[in-house]
Length: 135
Image (cartoon, rainbow, N blue to C red; front, side, top):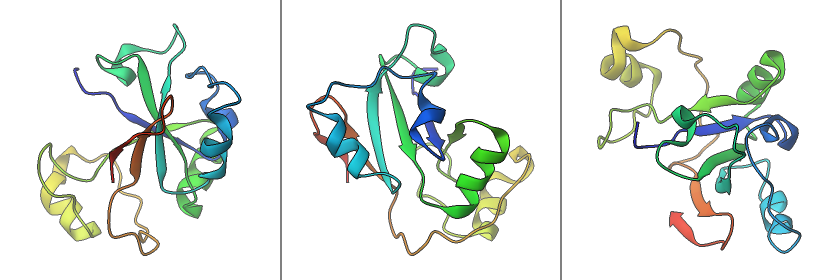
């Protein structure tokens, strides 16, 4: 897989097994953006599987503010993969019905919840530089 995946967590500790946190110069900005809709590309540990990172040396990670998702992470006991509810290069589905129409039998389960007013996917930034890659 060339593309990497996004891991989401209820807290930073759930991301600890996968990433090498950056130094003190970068971490205050990252910490201040969480929990919330901010995804950061952080360098990975050598043990992080390539099926998560794709061809990259970083992993997209986020500490979620969504109460259902945070509860799911806490119940599971760790970070989970987050993905857009769409096929590659297609617009994201904006409702449970659209997700079912688009992905249908490919779904194992659909946890239905609102997007808390979000109109767009999370912002993605490079953790090493702060540069915005997706706004």
